[in-house]
Length: 206
Ligand SMILES: Nc1ncnc2c1ncn2[C@@H]1O[C@H](COP(=O)(O)OP(=O)(O)OP(=O)(O)O)[C@@H](O)[C@H]1O
Ligand SMILES: Nc1nc2c(ncn2[C@@H]2O[C@H](COP(=O)(O)O)[C@@H](O)[C@H]2O)c(=O)[nH]1
Image (cartoon, rainbow, N blue to C red):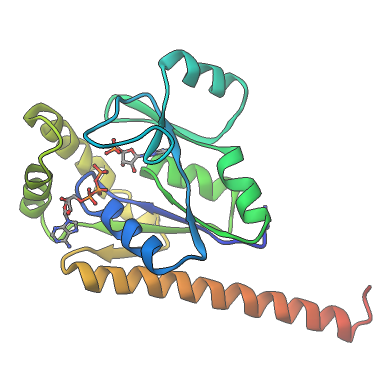
């Protein structure tokens, strides 16, 4: 599908820093809008319904799956997460750029539906640093941290399927790279649209 707005998808193993990078990008760039996912996991800390996620029951998630309400959804860390069609389609159709922070399974599903979506994978600088970020964040129990690290092995192996890979060692450097990807995509599409309009005009195609 082709829309006037751009779609960016950021995926990473838990703790690599994707939420921090996306949050910083959104603060700097008002043209990019976030997508708020649905999840069956319970809220953490200060998380609010409708802000970080729509926290829904298993029954509600099942109902949405049956109603074909998700553009993608996946089982991640023993819970379910999904992006509703409603959340992104009207935004990109109106010309906004939308950024999704989802896991690799969802990212690959998005690419199948939106061939122009730009997939970005965030890597931690090392295994030790990934563990220590999860521990320092202090939001997950040791069991959950172990499960997330275990799942990270499979997630890291998916990086080559993405359009871009950013190593989040120095935060500012990684943010610079993410901004550059967003700007490059905007330039590419505005140039393509202009070229298409010029061609139509030159050929007198109404
Ligand atoms: N470049 C960095 N250097 C050091 N710490 C970082 C860096 N980037 C992020 N962090 C810290 O690492 C922790 C994990 O970051 P964040 O919550 O953004 O990860 P995430 O990939 O979104 O994880 P999840 O998928 O579990 O939500 C946070 O405490 C964050 O402040
Ligand atoms: N496929 C999808 N994955 C999603 C979505 N929203 C979030 N996620 C990913 O889940 C894990 C865990 O997130 P957490 O907030 O519980 O730490 C992480 O990799 C997210 O990117 C979604 O809509 N679809």
